[in-house]
Image (cartoon, rainbow, N blue to C red; front, side, top):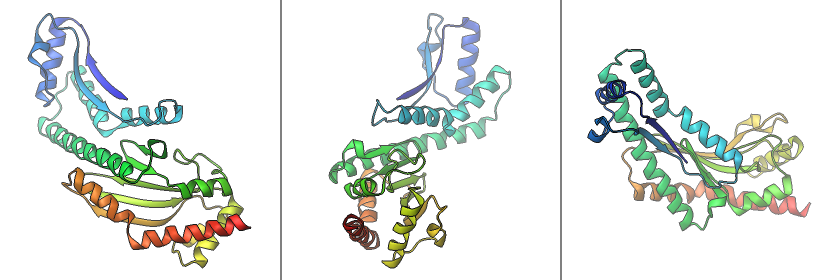
Length: 261
């Protein structure tokens, strides 16, 4: 999915004025776009990967994230200033644009690395999602729990199951989480009590019948300047972490207990 901002075939004098203003803000404009015969000029594009084009919820989420992204929000403010005859501070805007370029470059490396890592671990595209803010995935054990404990009592991410791995990221760091969602209260309390009995640590509020979201594993890693290979290595190190693997083994034992009940 791609969001495009384009200038159409308006009166040449106004068109040239607008393009010159864009250039002063640091937004590149092709020389051919300034010719009188030019009609259409794209001055902004942002792409988002969609895993399932028949998933209306994912499509709607993608559209909202593209529109509300910091990059497009900045652009809307810049265009509004131009149309109002104002001149945005060049140094501030140029700094924002540099940050935008750095963010896009970093995010691209994360997206590609995450997909490769999913492939290396045999996880199909139907079992993960990539958005502008985060990536998420599930493993077969999570589907087994979903069959036993049911879906969440309200929409939760894209899976609506008891468990999900997700990662938030910025230019500087990556935040990895294994979280339990808002499944039916009685089953959730039973699950949390089993986790506690097995020595899994979490916020005590997770034992409340009204609890919805409980993180049972988190890890923050500094990733500033990482390339694709470094991200893949980081994903692998986080996932193979002994503490996380012990939690997953404990979940397997708990699932066997639920299955036998």
